[in-house]
Length: 278
Image (cartoon, rainbow, N blue to C red; front, side, top):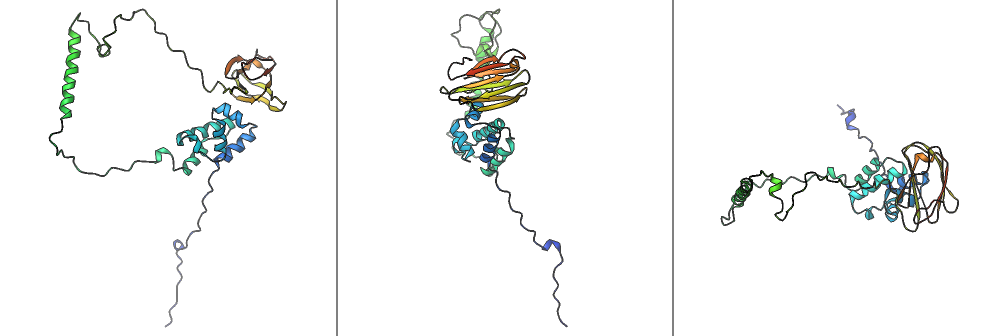
């Protein structure tokens, strides 16, 4: 009787074709293309994000060694992405995938169980007893301060105050709160050899036209409420601002306030140094 061979009909036995892995995201290429599409120069992005120009060039070339570490690299990627109008979180995720993963994914290995600790040297000092004795001394000093002198109850904070304090604070004296620090996001970076102008539409929408020192158009569009634009040039920036009262001006690192009155059209020119509108 002849033997017949049977080929397995089990689908599980058929190997599935390998799925090619997705190519890695070119973070620098994405940021560079988005910057060009937004009509921004590297200097403008640097002024808006406070990331130095050499670091920006390195990131666009996929070189993150100049960022100073993974934490700074992630922060730079998020700031640049926001400035050029793209979502920075997928780029940060791509950076983590290419550089060993996010910090939360790296968990320390558990320590091996070495069993109970045994004290073999009986000549070592008993630190627990010393700490208990120190606590008793502190409690005794506090109790002495509470019931000595004029019997005035003292708080723990008063008992630990320096002995050299002589005059008590006046009960009517008011404590002045520290002045709030200026917003870092609101003040444009101002290199000494360039003019840097930042416009923030705080009170409404305004139409803005900006020209550089050679007459080249940098921006001609509506600036919606909540939006901002930063312009920089070695020589001068010329502006035409419609509804000037809606736009807040920052020139060469100085806060100049609103560009004008509500509904007013302003023609302004700024150069490096102390901002003087022309």
